[in-house]
Length: 239
Image 1 (cartoon, one colour):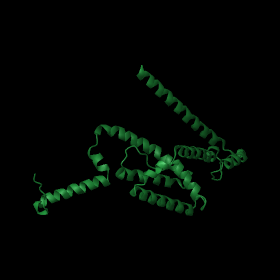
Image 2: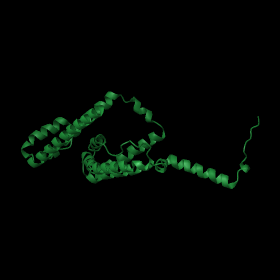
Image 3: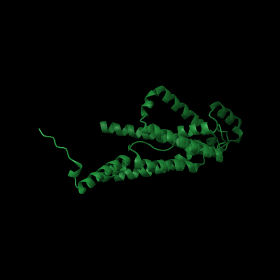
Image 4: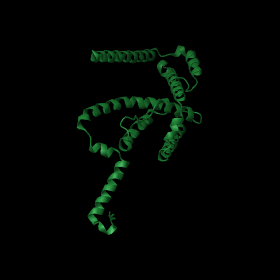
């Protein structure tokens, strides 16, 4: 059996150029995962993707503004945090199902952390919030480069569930001032929010309360109607 090894001189310039192009193309595909997906895109998915994009766009604008207000920032910063990550992740992301953008729990944690060293809405508060976002981004980037995602496995399910439930309750009560139309100080203590709201019951804005209550009722009714329609549809398919 004879083994042949190619020497550098055995390749001509065209072969070396082809190998170089293939290597660069491979590196580009690894760096920008959008390229291979875009080259093999199925046009049958175009209609659904456009519908999904419009839905996300319609929901993202008010959602981003609400999250910014929850974090104690002007609403415009919520739009920045909603649009820029989506554009970057479309180029460099590897998952087609991952939701990217601000979330309520992160906004609440920003308000709880930065609110202890600066007054919400001030220039200093905005600067600290931007600095915090930059620091967290650098930490996440470093952990991603070092392949430290395994640390998530050490977070138990009860801990995550308790944190999520507590954050949901705090977020709900923090919006009480907008539902009642009265100014309430921003705090993470639920009993303080409730006691202050009770003291200010005489100053409740009735039109604001009626509009907020009607909106909540519509959301609950639509959710119940959607669940009923889905149940009927599944039952028809089974029959």
